[in-house]
Image 1 (cartoon, rainbow, N blue to C red):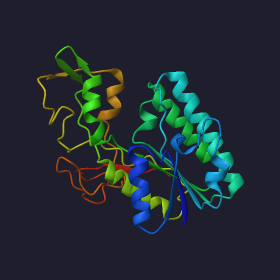
Image 2: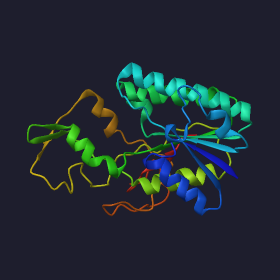
Image 3: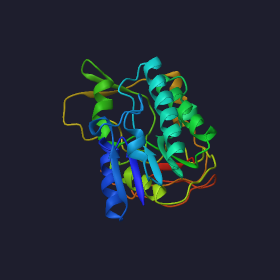
Image 4: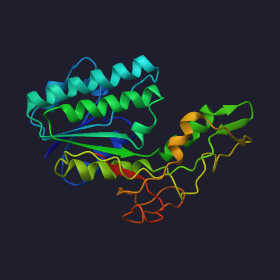
Length: 255
């Protein structure tokens, strides 16, 4: 089966292409490096020719409010239009856990717009929401540094290894479209990894509460997809629900 990975040269996309090929799929990496540009539509028709599935794991080069909204809206509209023309039967997109709870951020407003465009399209779809990647922890700490202090909200997080994210996306891409929407599985709890764990520098940790942090502390129950492992010992524990105390909840399917 031909599966086109849009954003196939990035962190998740490159791992996803390898995983799909290991499972015998014809995985095609499509990105500006290979002449495919979702903003202009360049190369999309050729890349999607004969494809059964298109997976969108792209990200905006700029997180400025207007720029990130333009990226996700324009790219998604173009991709869906070219998919329809090519007869693609399954659109898979990677999104973020808790997107609808963090709309004070321009990035999350843009991700919400992306999800809404997908759900309104005629193409069968699956949307997978993942938590933060372990590979970005140092970058978050760098961004949150003020002088010699790392200022972070007083909330636990459940980061996930990029390999596990790629594995989850691959499983969905090789399966049937879900075509239903669920926001369940948003649980930031019990994974005791702090953002500054393992940083080999002299910065100290500080706590900073913001209005938007409230979304990180909510704990509705639900069903989630969980990673196999991560760099700090978090291991999947199966189904979770309103009356359980889950551990290591990492990915939810919000298709």
